[in-house]
Amino acid sequence: MFYQDHEGTYTTSAALTPHALAALPAGVYRATVGARVTFTPVALAALPPTLVETPARRIVGQELTALLDERVGQRLRAAGLPRRRGVLIAGAPGSGKTTLLAQLIVQLVAGGAVVILDPNPDHLERGVIPAIRQHDPGRMVAVVWEDFEGLAWAGGNELLQLLDGLTSPDDLIVLGTATNLTRVPARLLDRPSRIGLVVTLQPPEAQALSGAVGAGVLGRDAQLDLAAMTAGLPLMAVQEAATLFALGYEADEVRDRLIVAAAGWAALAAREVRA
Image (spheres, helix red, strand yellow):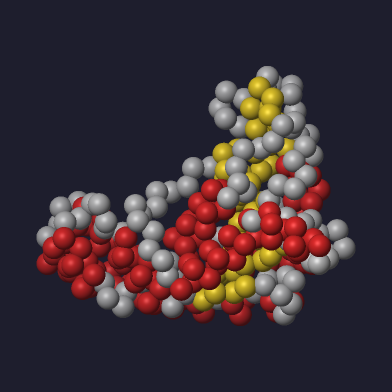
């Protein structure tokens, strides 16, 4: 059972919270494990009002749709195959990884999944997942790590056990992002039973994702100026330009700001990729 306190946090202990639920509602949470397991709801940052489809969005979205379908789960179980998948989104800084990740999290929640953000991997099998499934055994759990490459080195053994071990839980999606694939240990990428899908975002992906940034906020002329002056720039530049337009800057002023900032962004991106 889960018990909800007046702040909306769910816990496996009834000591402080009188409202009982048999199953954790679909949503995004941070989980902590101690004397009891606590799930704190997380509100995602605002998304663009229109979500533009890109090749990477379609590929990953189609895979998640299939995994969330219980009929697919039944077929996998009948064939003796796990309903478990690791998905990694790679790309340079500003390529749209976080924007795409946020879209996918929305899809997972709409599909009924419990999404856990940046958990300690050692706590998943020992506390977090058993708590979710105590009274809801087939519940789809999605685990999301935004800094997957850093986690892969610090918690690589726990990740291997989670994804491809003797006690690996079923009905599980692991979703992460990485700036530099060479920093992800090869043992996590060399078998599809571990990370089964890797998509790398290219600059055209970032431009496609940016198509919705100004929708509903900017006028038609500002949207055209935004598209023209940010062609070939990373998504963070598109978002900054849209913000400046929304703040009332004229096109020439926005262009000047981007020119000044572009050199710094390029140096930062190069440094992060080399790190």
